Image (cartoon, rainbow, N blue to C red; front, side, top):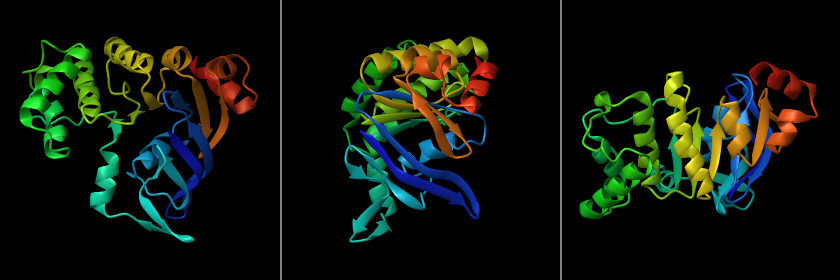
Length: 250
């Protein structure tokens, strides 16, 4: 479903991703873990071309992301073409990025109506279904200021699902939440994993990585240092850097 082929990226002269190779199967959940500054969020943002890559390629469901090939050259797509690709790659950010002047229902309806061109009646029915799915059937007419952080993040997840994405990306979705609100967001993410949605998750929630993810990629200095099943990464990591990180966070 997602293929990273020798992906590298720089910020000016600073390399931030080095020759990343990774395949994510349809229905698989992969978590990206590692110390701050290791390139986890940058790698995630490359999937929908929020960050441009300098080398390599990324494909989602067989479609090259952000570029078109012409012989040995690659040319960046137009903003309109990139927006079309992003419409099928859902992303949930640390901060919820909801429209403050719109209700939860209106926030979820917004993109299906204005991006996909769905009729308002159909978009509303979809939004009602998705808000109920994330446990917010009684909060549909509430504005973001009336919701807790965990509830706002669940609205953001419903909004991403409203675009019927092929994959869903989570960039530290619980890091801005009070500890007591983390569980309600992780429960929704667990249910999505159970339903077979392809997901990549940047997280510091080790219990989620261990219990829900099919594989864990440990990143250090812009490289995937180690990739394996949770049992391998937690119990028998091959590299000392991975073992020392796990000892500190778990």
